[in-house]
Amino acid sequence: MNAANKKCVLELSVLSLLNRSDSSGYDVSEHLIKYIPIAGGEVYPILRKLKNEGLLKTYMRDEGGEPPRRYYSITQLGQDVFFAKKEEYLRFAKSIEKILEGSDYDKN
Amino acid sequence: MTKIEYLQRLNAELSKNKIPDAEDIIGEYEQHFAFKLADGFSEEEIAAKLGTPEVIAAQFALEMSQANTARGGKTFIIIGLWFAAIIEAMIYVLFFAWGVVLFAASLASAATGAALIGRFNIAGLIPYMPYVSALIFGICFLSFAVFLAAGAYYYLANIKQMIKVTIRWHKNMISGNMLPSLPVNPQFSAKTKRKLRTVLSWSVAVFGATFVLGIVVAQIHSGALEFWHAWSWFL
Image 1 (cartoon, rainbow over the protein chains, first blue to last red):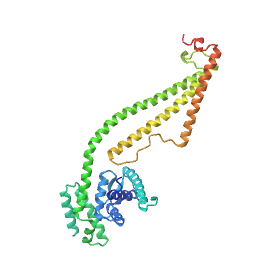
Image 2 (cartoon, rainbow over the protein chains, first blue to last red; image 1 turned 45 degrees about the vertical axis):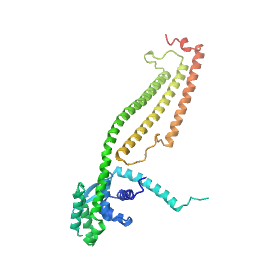
Image 3 (cartoon, rainbow over the protein chains, first blue to last red; image 1 turned 120 degrees about the vertical axis):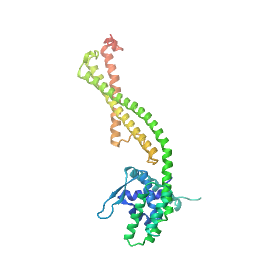
Image 4 (cartoon, chains in turn red, yellow; image 1 turned 180 degrees about the horizontal axis):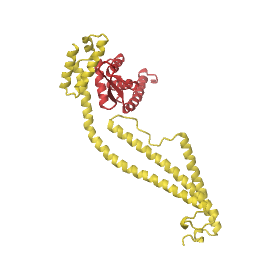
């Protein structure tokens, strides 16, 4: 069960964001730090790792006047992995919630 | 720490850790500064929130070393997978060939049935029998043809699913990602399943019934248990 550690959760979150729409590294970073206590600069190593694994790809987008920005988009493999890991994580989270709430644990 | 200082230190740390494409990485952080500055933050604030260059560079180094160890082990896995793929391909070609044989047998059976019912005696291959027997045996061959065709279809669907499972397994082994493995049985819709079952059971029933009936009728007609001798089929 590797969805449990923080790194995997971060990767899963990044995949989730990019599964919705292509974004720049900055947008991903800004969105994540709203919810997860990490430094803004720590998102870029994750993006690079996912790219090296073939789950993401990058392209440059020109937005008139400014220098072109690097955008990340999810690959087919990335989507497959995302859906599989999402399922795995949600199942795991649900089990832990059950244990923490202790709803079906009766000592007689 | 100013923007320039931060980027220089990051650059130094990246080259210390021998991270490839350091320029790309620096570019990302430069972009980050540019956005934050546009939002009105000071360079010191931005640098403080990014995390220290040492920590950031260490994270890049960690990702890289993991990727490298994964790749080192992978060479063996990939070589092994190639050998496995060669054997698998041979097995599947063999399995597929059996499916083709089944279809061919079905076609042959259908042709024989049609010839019996339609009274085409091509090159005198069909021995003598009264038309009643020919009709019953014709239906018998036709139902056998249907049975073989349905069986071949089911068989080939199994092979197709097996190939899919194998490909998924290969993909998982290479990427190290665990996509859920596929079910081994072919996934028919409920409708197809019902149809297939109906066709198979009816064709077997008709085949069995006409086979027995055909022999009995032939025996009565020829007045001998071994009607093939009475009609001198093998002379």
